[in-house]
Amino acid sequence: MKLDVQFKEFLSQIRPTDPQQEAWRAAAKTLRDRLAADSDLKNIVVSTFLQGSIRRATAIRPLGEKRPDVDIVVVTNIDHEKVRPEDAMNLFVAFLDKYYKEKWRPQGRSFGITMSAVDMDLVITALPRPSGTPHGITEDASLTAASDIAAIYRSDAARSLDTLEDDMSWRLNVGWRQRNVFDELGRPAPMLTESVTQVLDDAPPQGWKDNPLWLPDRDTKTWGRTHPLLQISWTAEKNRRTNRTYLNVVRVIKWWRLEKAEKLPKYPKGYPLEHMVGYLLEDGSDLTTAEGVVQVFEAFRDQWLSRARARDVPALADHGVAEHNVLARLSPEDFEAFVEIVNGFAALAREALEAEDAAVSGALWRRMLGDRFPLPPPRGGDRVPAQFAAPPAVTSVARSDRFA
Image (cartoon, rainbow, N blue to C red; front, top):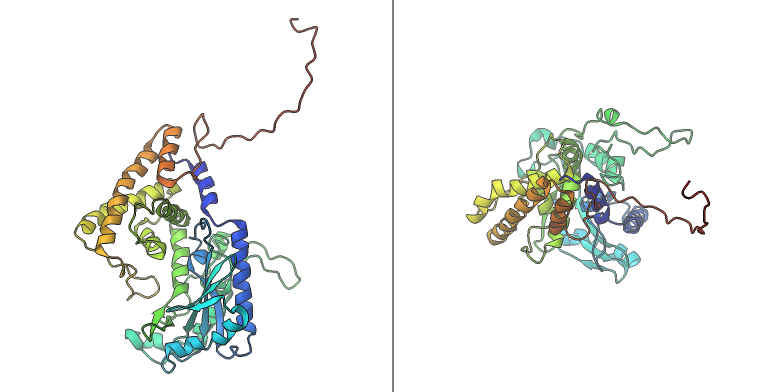
């Protein structure tokens, strides 16, 4: 059975909690405000924005002592053709010592900041230089004005702290505005309907997609290309193309991955797994969450089982930078082991979906997804048990008309 009510409750149990969301919002806002106000960095910082699974609304609730991971991208005007990666990153050391002393550490392509309630990654990037044509960028794309590119990163669409689930109207467009803004008279602006927001094109200015940001890597001593906003935009589009099922399916499969970690190889997980789900989930359908999970697991089996057994790992291009293979670090051994285990769970998921008895279906889904999946009520069906208040105490009184 689809058990829509149970899946809705299950999703509420595996999303980050309200306190966790409040913690990462506060930490991200504080970090961004400090960067914007820092006198030593004001001449190089162009903008900052939130990226990662939290922004894409694909994050699941951390377990135990783990904290939410927050990724903040700093867009700078550093000339990546003249400044060494390590020198670019060192420009932020004084800032980190000032505000996060003994809480930060250097990483290969970012700075890690450990807080009491969240873990943050500060990612330093540089704007592209459209005057050049590196990596085969077309001449037309290279002529895109630097100011137009910077405008995207300064826009409300880029800088919003809302996740893709918080605001379904989001589009990566300089004309997009958050719905909960105020007009010139201080009155809340009317909520935009989906039909209105469809008028806003998802595509930013011409050539922007062909000009990713540059990311310094202190380990390899090189600059590489990265396009996190394009990943976010792709995710938003995919969610709309799947009738808003995609984000739910990703979260369910990530939670399954967490529940079955002891049986599974270390990889794939995190974003590569999310990317694989996006590749396999079909567009243009009205699948429920349960149906979407089954469809993805069976697609793993049907499309990749024979390849996995042949130790042939597919190449999946990054949505932001096409020359990046998201599965480049996935070993043939791990790929085979993962798909073989998915093959078994595909059969279990299909059995759970086709079970006609709600209790049987719920037990099968729980076997797959763990104890946080709620069982249907005793009489079955897609319902939640009614919650009744205890009746008040009543003193028993004999009635003379009892048998009248």
